Length: 331
View 1: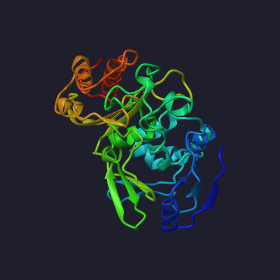
View 2 (view 1 turned 180 degrees about the vertical axis):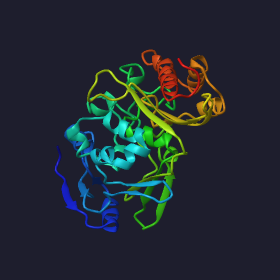
View 3 (view 1 turned 45 degrees about the vertical axis):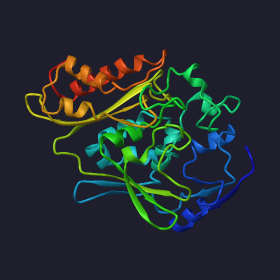
């Protein structure tokens, strides 16, 4: 690990200004950042500790929405009684990731901006366009089984690792950002992330000095049922091969009044299922229709030889989750 300076910010404005300096990075739980510093992937010259900015509160609004502070620990989020009652897929997503020790340190904002687990990104002896723009993407012809199948480019096929972000995407979350000049911005989660294109090193809309202050969620539809399901290679401490987050409302006959869904493990960002939702809304889908809608979501996918299985897997998991939640006919 290379030498760096450390300072603990005492207010949001100071933190933003300090983080605007070249080479500075914000430090929350540090569960991903410090690991990447040890691997020499990230080389900040200064760390600005933001753990004492008072951004660690979960505020449930009278309108049914919720505001989750950027510094809320994952363990506190998963254990919040109202989150578990009204947004259960958030708790399910958090508990599907990492270990208890990591969840006790990791924060909401850190979870959103954690970096890909593509082995070429983490190995500084290998080229990687995300780590060193213009150096190449050996994953395309190498180890890409766990990487993205949609939203990729010739420059990058890395997948986004967050479980929580997938659940937040299905719930129409917005990310609140304070700019270094004091301006407040609010981004729908889908707009917060960038696809790689020719600049895979830029993963979000954040600029130097920008500070995530909170994530907000609207009230869920009355009677909404929710679930997060993650397919992984082992039961603990493994990133998603494919994951699916679903929130739906349905009539007694199983026809869907509304449905929102997002996929994880398949794209460079949480992938909101924009094609699935209108295809199923108002329908009483059976397993065949559900799987067809899931596969249609990936019509523009560019799978590689060893990860093309993810398309059928994602469609199957979507079908299973919707059926389990009581939408449509039984499987």
